[in-house]
Image 1 (cartoon, rainbow, N blue to C red):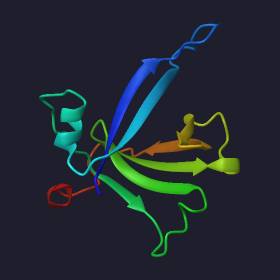
Image 2 (image 1 turned 60 degrees about the vertical axis):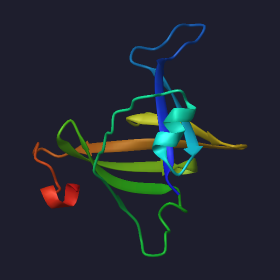
Image 3 (image 1 turned 180 degrees about the vertical axis):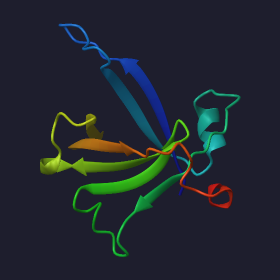
Length: 130
């Protein structure tokens, strides 16, 4: 099943006013096998296809995710970025970005840590990006 994720980034509002650079990100997961059908249901007639190369690392029997970890490499502004995301008790505020995720009645706290490569070249060959 294909999942379509919609992201909406808004300024964060609070009684004391937003901190500099603080944002609130709203995400929806739509269980629709056809992204075009999902966009049609949302009233979008035209949409722009956008792809990005992301490689996730996991053991043969998935154990990292079950332990609250995810490892991935993706392209950001043309440079490779390695990202470690930690959920639960191991997530420490003060990292590059922490967030609360809520799916149904379950809430989890997660922080991500990014490391950019010094080289601006892509870690993937053109054939790997296809």
